[in-house]
Amino acid sequence: MKQKYYYSVMACLDSTPEEDVVVINLSAFDEFGCEGIEEYNLDEAAIDNILGREAYLGAEIPNELIQKLEGKAGKVKYHFLTQDNANCFKDFLVGNKISCELEKNSWDDWNKKWKEHYKPIVVSPELKVIPVLNEEDFAREDDCIYIYPGMGFGTGTHETTYLCLKIFTDLFKNGFRPENCLDFGCGSGILGVAALKLTYANAIFCDVDRDALDNCKKNLYLNFDDKRLHGSSLILRERLKFPEGFDLVYANILENILLAEKDLIIGSLKKGGQLIVSGLLKDQEKDFLTKFNPDHRLEKVRTEISGDWCAILFEALT
Ligand SMILES: C[S@@+](CC[C@H](N)C(=O)[O-])C[C@H]1O[C@@H](n2cnc3c(N)ncnc32)[C@H](O)[C@@H]1O
Image (cartoon, rainbow, N blue to C red; front, side, top):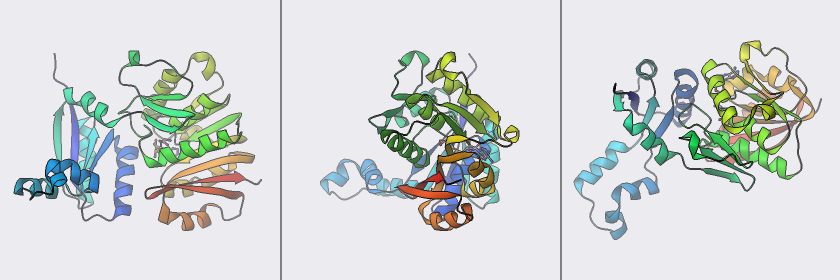
């Protein structure tokens, strides 16, 4: 049998400002088809993990362990299914003066790696996200979102996605039952799937990326049968002209895209509709609020924070 490979780009980002790392990470997914990121941050847990018993016992740290620690600081590994995508991403990093190396890895390690990294995520008692590596491996439960891991952005492990799910489940607990939903920048479709799982809503899944829509479709059929999907659809961004009348809109995209698309995003809401915006750093919130909602068509309801990220819930006033 022909040997299969996947490709990783190991980048050294120790002297790259954090805002730039965020943009690089999101660009890796959005523009270069990255399938997953492994970060080697030297937080306390990571250090303990590397030092193991030595740290625990307070013993002198051997030289080779110190080198290992130093070698891992600020390194980020980006995984790709094709060499072309990995090469393009590497060129992008080199163009931004970031040192990096391309690795070719045996396909046999792929599933093993995903299994190590993707554990079920409990968003709330109402909702869990379950990675599905093997279609026979799961039973369709109503409180579970099933997602193929390794299919681009939207496996629920990223804070920006998690925050949207958290806000949505809180709304749900408070009695919110949307009849329809727009998942704008749907990626894997995880956010719209949450709305379809917990309510009787229909959803429109929209993305600029055809591959994302293909992946989203696969995830939809992983979660629902044809009957439940009746009334929902997938649409490329360029075909989504003037959507309107949505009870719930999600938009988890980079700040500059949210701003560029603000008229469409805000215009798609029904009066009283709920908009969950994510993909913002905490520090960007103030400036974003001024630029995104200059004519006060929205009322900010709350901000939810996780790590450096924030997501904002708005209600449409008009
Ligand atoms: C950060 S991912 C979010 C994926 C998923 N919604 C989630 O929350 O995990 C952003 C997605 O927005 C898509 N995107 C980027 N620009 C867009 C635009 N102008 N219109 C629609 N989708 C866009 C990207 O292709 C990507 O799939």
